[in-house]
Length: 90
Image (cartoon, rainbow, N blue to C red; front, side):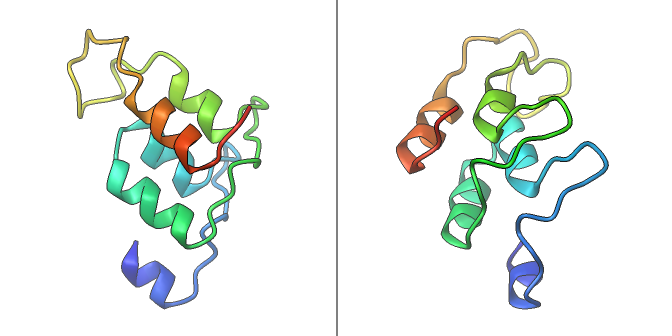
């Protein structure tokens, strides 16, 4: 992420699903990456192809895609709290 930002890449660029790096970092629980992206202008309001914001996407059921936590733990709300703390709303 540091290299991409140093090369002036757009932190709000979207993939084919309309998701930015913030969506993916939040969904996978990468708190330090989320903080980094927000410091560098990542937007909370960008909606993906499903009409979800990064906050809504992070709150969606995570297993089995989320390999950074237990595959059976659907109750982890730390990322929701972090995104809200940083200014995210639905």
